[in-house]
Structure formats: structure tokens, C-alpha cells
Amino acid sequence: MKVLLLEPAGTTLRVRDQTVLEPTAPIVWFVFPDRWYDVARFHLADGTFTGWYTDICTPAVMGKDHWRITDLFLDLWQPVEGDPEWLDEVEFDQAVTSGILSPHLASAAREARNELESLLRRRAWPPDICRNTDLTFPAARPPRR
Image 1 (cartoon, rainbow, N blue to C red):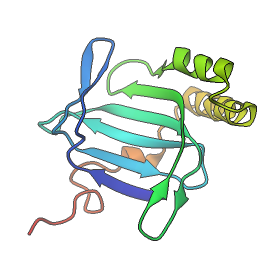
Image 2 (tube, rainbow, N blue to C red):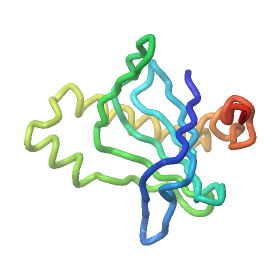
Image 3 (cartoon, rainbow, N blue to C red):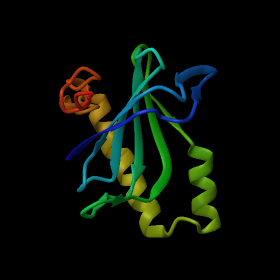
């Protein structure tokens, strides 16, 4: 697993008319090379933690100085307060129907969603490493010079 700090995010994301990520905000990103998802810890510009954003994607292929994934459209938003919700389901369905996503990738995305649903029911999502790492964690924020 890799823990990455993206600072700044460079984009705004709103869920249900609420800003959950601002352009100058940092993101702590958790990449699991053998899993069909990654997880991001989203913040506002002032560092306020807003929730976890899970991206269903192909397993990361890690190179010496790069890594690569393919986004499979489905995303899970889990706010600090409130219930988790799936995002981009219409886009996923359109990608499947139009053939942008192959049957293999669509099936893998659905399996990942089922896995995450099971973990959510057991209150085991996101993983402990995501819950226990924040912007003050040494691995998430290297020392400034």
C-alpha cells in the first residue's frame, strides 16, 4: 500500500450541494496495488476533514517513478457526518451500455462495489490505516524546509 499527499488538490468537489474538497486543500490518498479501489481523505482549504472518497478503479500498476490506474466510474462518498452514498452510477451505467467499459471491467467494478457494501455493513470501511492517518501523520506530510 502507498500513502500519498496531494497538495493542493487543484479542484472543487461538491456532493449534494456541499463542498467536500476545495482547490487549495490537501488530499491524503491511499493506494492499494492489489485492490480494485483506492481511498482519499478529503479536506477543505483550512484542513477541515470532510470525509472519505473511494474510487473504484483497476488495481494500481506501480512503476519506478509512476503509477497507473483506470477509473471505473463508480465512487463512494462517506462523509464525516451522515450516511455513505454511491456517486456516478448513471455514468457507470452509460459506460457499460456504450461499451466504454468492457464486460470484464464492469463485472470487476460491481464485485468491488459488493465488497465495499459488505465492509460498510460491518462498519469496516474505510480501513484502519485511512482512519488513523491524517494531515499531522508524519508519513502524510513530509517536513518543510
